[in-house]
Length: 466
Length: 113
Image 1 (cartoon, helix red, strand yellow):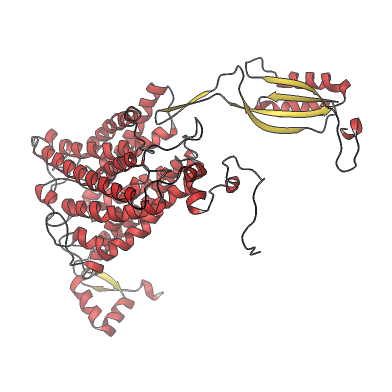
Image 2 (image 1 turned 45 degrees about the vertical axis):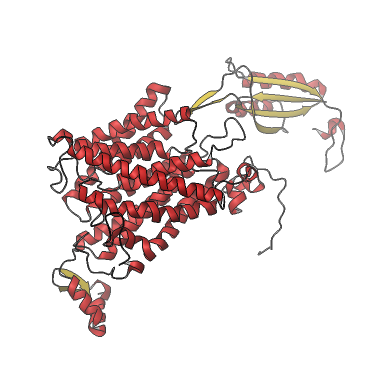
């Protein structure tokens, strides 16, 4: 019998013999365990750990989703913009981000009490999740903090300096994400106290990133194209894979936001899946009518728009309401993307159209469809006889998010443009960011410096290792 | 010597190759090319952005033969590549000044057989 699998029972939970032995030997850890053991629920903890892993996987999924849509000469840069967020935001979160988002503070931002994760241990934090270790809550929230700035990268594709982008997302995380997370989810946050409902981050994640994406795309200007059909997505199959990964990961994003393996989590998972399916279906039908051909990219875009719209509402709405929310967000986001051409800004991969507009619609839809029959801890929306009071609160939440994300992004963008510069040179942009900024090429022939690829012209200039 | 240069539908390449094999022709150069003629292109939609591609994929087959065989080869290619629809392609017969086999230095007809 392997000793790792041997459990002894202490209170309501099982701990391994190894842990218990260590506790006996060390004394202090045993005391810490004894304080927390009674309240940790293994089912809840298992689900939140799995959910954290699912949400982590969404960022690589996002990288693929975006990566397939850019030109072949920029795909590695696009993927890196997601991956650098994983590493950078993790460091920020550990040092100060988590403390400023969730530790006790003022209504607008958290405090410094948990800097360097001081006091964020393995005992539960009763205020956020009473049945899981505090670090499980912390690492789960970290995954949200990672994907949010990464979402912005789709708007600025193919033309932003990597240094400038990295600095931007780090500062944006501290100046936009962290205060918003505190206001909406933190104990003492003023939108939370007001009664704004945002189950899994419709405002904190999607509206904030969508609006910031729009502002940053406007500051950067339009992408250069070297030929008439240059702007086509270079590899839709990886966009399709990315969508599948996102959809799968979103179950952790939404159902995990129940912070327990309970009925609300089940409800959120059902709503999430239903909204994604309904939005994808409606999007494809709209294309069938508008262009007489249903596109793969349209299906993927619709699915993501549905997932975005259900994010604030999941956990508060009936499954059939989720289908309605998905069906309604499809024409709204579709219209927002079509309107882009009229306004002339280059939100390259439609982050605003999908996440900004979809997120705003989702927040409002929560004010319409929320029902205490689904979640007694929620509220009733306009369609459940409670009048417009929740809808008005949702509107306040949207306005605060748009104002904060929009203004800070604008100021940050101006600052970076005036200092290290936002945009790569014309030459770098035409060469492609993979070669110009990273010294790599995604696909074989492109190492020669042309998309078509040519065996002529490569010169070995480095040391030979063979 | 004549170079027979045929621009054909990609899906007709196998038929053309077997027709040429039946004539005893073994050497040829094949490349993937794009071009435009009377055939209409394709309209693509990516999130509403419309791209019309009128440069269509074709295959170019090049064969150099003695003057006396050129017409027969061209007819065989035409017969194998024809569907009767717009987009079947073109065949050009182009005079060749000289041919040299690199390995042996052979010149003229003996370099191409």
